[in-house]
Image 1 (cartoon, helix red, strand yellow):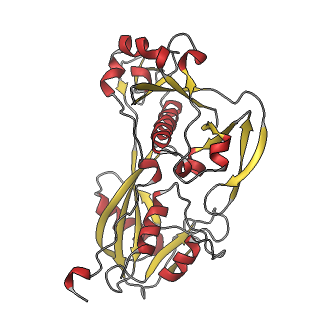
Image 2 (spheres, rainbow, N blue to C red):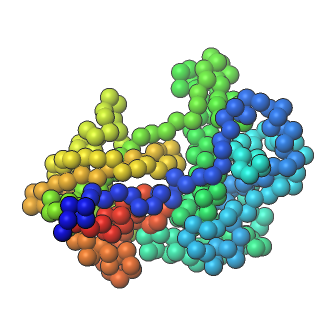
Image 3 (tube, rainbow, N blue to C red):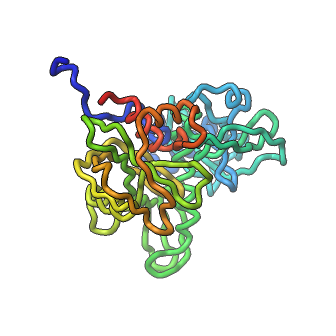
Length: 337
């Protein structure tokens, strides 16, 4: 084998589902209310219900190709004559402004069973010709524009729910900049949407360049046979690389090395940014799952991971396509060693 054909360290081969976006956020327009209000009649609106679901065309969802389902947006004037006070500006795409408002389905509808990721079924509500889907379960089936708009809308909704009172004095806050900032009515403190950094790491063994086995673990609250790579939040004063080393050591008792960055994905449940890494570890080192956090951890071969990704191993359920964990595991499984 020539030097040019040697395998290289694996990289993400596709963009994580919730990292996709086409809309320009147009930050400067958030402080230009006259311009935004003038464009309201031609805008489109994303309806987000109290459970964080949005409508998509039922026929597109049931016959979808992964990554091809649009949102069922509504003409702005069908929502209100002028910009509602609670409306959130999401950005602009193809000369159209997009907004989000809270709106529940117009009736109980009917229930349709679909795959919700991890090989587990979920039911969605269908009202008329619209199916109301959840970002966590169905983010991967959305097209790029829909994925970006919905991820932003859900992130802002979750921040609004947690930013009603001032962190300094406890006073009530008022939203402004069309949902992108809040001001305390008591002390005047201004705050912006918060994001909690978290790391997620695929650990493989030392065989060859990309290893022959990957370290997977499961939490005690997960359904049977569900496994994923390890993750955790960054602590105050901690670098991302040191966080990877600490989290893997704390959760399964393994020391890792050669930590390298792969990519990132917003994860607004409620407000995280997941930063993906790869690392190497000694597969013969004993695994010591953290009590109460990790129910089981094991090294799994590339052959078995490939079978699980193809749906041929019911004893191993891997992360759904919405998560960056799925993209990481698939990229590793497809890599040469």
